[in-house]
Image 1: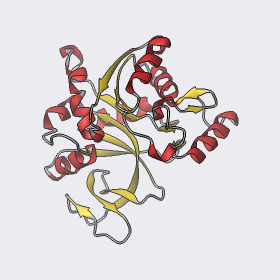
Image 2: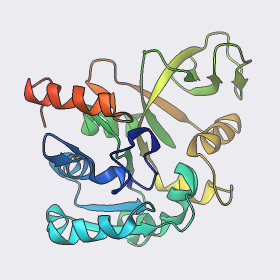
Image 3: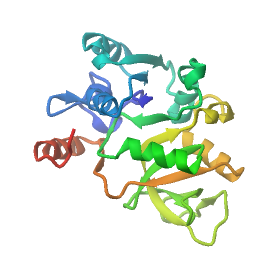
Length: 246
C-alpha cells in the first residue's frame, strides 16, 4: 500500500494545484518513483489511498496504465491518517485467501530510499513479527524506543517530554521511523481503533499487549523524507549524482 492521501502542506506552493503524489523529482512523480521501485522487488498489486486532488491521481494512473501493475485506489472523504487509511483498505489484503498469510509493504509516497525490501521481508519472517518498521539512528523530534532485541517498547516526542513506555526494558534505544513497514495480514483484525488514527498508536498498544513489533535497522541505506521543496531539490541532485540507484 502506498500512503498518498495527505495534503502535502509542507510542499506548498507545489501542492496548491496537485496532490503530493504527483509532485516531481527530475521529471518523475513521487508516485511513479515509489511504484516502479516496488515493481523492481516483484510487487505487482498495490492499493493507493487518495484524498487531496484524488481525481488527478486516478487519471494519472489511467494515462500511465498503472505502470504495468494492478493499482487499486482507496478514496478517503476525510483524511484517516496512516492507521485509519490502512484499516479502510484492509479488504485489498484479505480478498485472496491464498495470499492472506503473506506480509505486505506499507510505504509513504513522500519518502525515497534504497532500503532492500526483500531483506526487510526476510527479517520480518525470520522474527515472526506482526509488523517490522524500517528505522535509522538519526536526529528526529519523534523517536520510537526499542529494546536490545529490537522490539518496540515506546516512543518519545520532543526532548522535554516524558517518553511513553508500553513495555519496560532496562535498555531503550531511540530510533527514527522511516515510513516503510512490512506488515502481516493478521494485524488487520487487531486494528480496533476507529475513524482517524495513526498506525503507530496501534503498534504501541499491540506491543504493550505482547505482540512483536520489530525494528529493521536501515542505517546503511539512503533515505530522505520529501516533505519540503528543499528535500526535493536535494533528492534530484542525489539522483543525478547516482547517490540513489533507482
